[in-house]
Image (cartoon, rainbow, N blue to C red):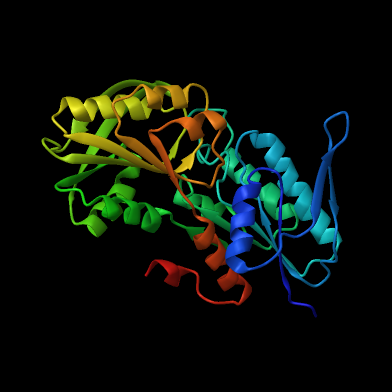
Length: 313
């Protein structure tokens, strides 16, 4: 049996896949993704994967449905080519916000996507900062859940801020904010927000003291940035000296980049789980840090059957 490690990627984030391969000192596997004139996706593997341990790197970001189909077809191609084990490396897991029924007659799409990935032939999933931790339970296969917090915390420590307060943008993010505050030995504050619809916030109330402090807003993702910008204004109105934001996934849809550029935020720090648009790259308020080494180390440990959780001890 050939237990050689192979990494292949779709077209969602080739730069991240290349950086992971550089960390592991491996060439990127040959997987050609093409499209028929009617839009159908065709995948053709350019090397033998029989009996090998294959990791498929694909963030299910914009265009979400296209990237999901690419991932599923890649997995199916590997399964039919007799790969020994297929691990789906999904740095950003799309549809994660649809993890429960928030109204009658709506789907739980995060579970549907998990079923599709499993049925396609995946034996293991590696992801980062899932929007809701319970999504791990939607899979009937092992899931390794990584956190970008150590990378983002290192960035904060390098700035040597005095008198920090960690801000949770909603009640659901309190556990994340508490974890950051524990490691930085500082207090937390919470924003109580009331939504009037999807991506629409009706009101915000700050619970906690931010006066004369450096406020650090932490979240798993930034989508339209409307909520984040309103949160920044709320925190500054309560006397914070300055506000920075940390987020793992830079979804940045719609007018997000423009909102961030025109906001009172000092800067927003994101990772490269999702590739930045050209507009976002040019925005001086958006800074990035790479998760390639972290993902690469996790891939190496999974391949060697070593502990992944010890990365965060």
